[in-house]
Image 1 (cartoon, helix red, strand yellow):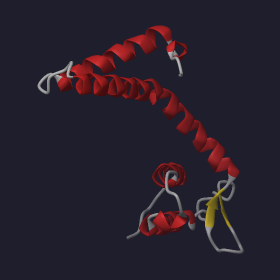
Image 2 (image 1 turned 30 degrees about the vertical axis):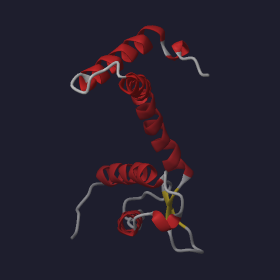
Image 3 (image 1 turned 180 degrees about the vertical axis):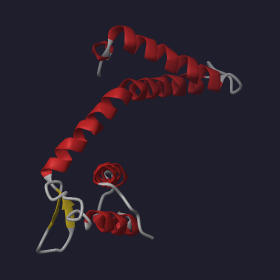
Length: 142
């Protein structure tokens, strides 16, 4: 299959591939666990960098022959990742706090099985409100 891309489209696709790789493979323990098909697609995309004048964002390691993102691409894309992490941080914290409180209530028998799902939603809303009102400074770590 052949894709006809503009320079801007290629640039966006390279950035998306970098972030996808970061998310997909960042939690893996070893390179053996990485998706070979994904890596092949990434290399095929990166190998076109000369055609799109993207030599500042993609480079070829001459020793291994592997195409790699440069620090310029990493810096640019990490800004997007940090923005995303900041945007979802309170949602994640509220969800974890709610789940912890909910598990204690379920284990103690304070919540019936029928009411458990609704209670989890109530707790998540509760923690969301607390975090919005008081910010992260309201958290106490024990």
